[in-house]
Image 1: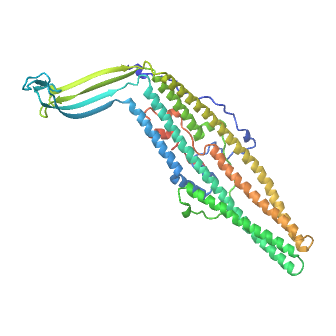
Image 2: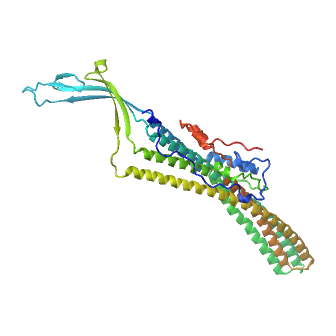
Length: 496
């Protein structure tokens, strides 16, 4: 039995191979960050050097309710590990009972006088008897075929997956907040741009009215100037709607009612940071969703062993003992002791194919987790490539758009001077002013998209999370070791 107790049926877990490219295709022409730190660590949002964003991100970690849900699910998974580990140990019970009974003998004399023997072994005249019993029992099922070990293995892997899910949820909420924050700052800057444009257009309207008063400009010129001014004012007002919605979304992310939360208006003066992408092979250890999918493969693989163990006989060792007596005075005396010990073996001979079906279901569930893992890896590579491409292309677009803004501003200056000198009508001024305003808004939106895509690239790379090797968890399944395995507490501050 000692030899068999070291056995564990079912396949040992081996991580399935998946195709990993040597480098990212979109890394061509990508500038390497300095200093050459190949990974982002810890509070990844600090690379943006925005104190307001950093303060909001810290509140997310403390108050977001989706993170609280994931933390509770992790605690539940850890408790299930301890439940599974309880199967290693025997079950010990103790109890006391009292029974008062009456036995009427069928074969007695006419007077009903007969001899009875109580359950405690004492005899006496026919009538009511008392039984006092103190019983202790031990029952243990040796884990000969590894059913309990595979169950613990599966539960521990599921707990590690839950820990990775917690970090995936945390990263998702953090990046969602950063995206909303940069969009809000883009709108703040756009509002300031529109307000400045309104001021310039008001001056143009005053100039046109003055020229109209002196008979130099027509009424149509005044109406054109007023139309452009009012439409720009409407645009400036409309920006406030989306800004308010983003502010409310941020309030929910940090666990505060939208009614009591506000963010001061401030323009965005940031530029996209240089983000170290690393190499594709690092992605397998850096994305919590990939780690979660890999751990669920391990859990499903262990469940195959649990299903296979049902084919083997169950062996139970049991022992019991205690005291029994007919009265309190002699109940716990040594002569009234009793004990029993033994073993039992049981094997299922026929169950209509249940075990075969359960094993087939476990293998199919494992195959599904393998496919899910590989799809998660492919999605991870795709997201990194998408955002690398977006940042590279948007950088080129920003440079071209900056030239367009410069040309549009020069066009406004030249055309306005021509209008003042009377060589062109006001329609020309309106056209170049609209073009200049649209060019500046487009340039601002490109900057906002670059900031958002920078956040998405950080998310695609796994944020500041990094997994520990799965074998670092000992057989004890201690909750803190599960936490360390998940990488939940392994974040380090960024190198500066």
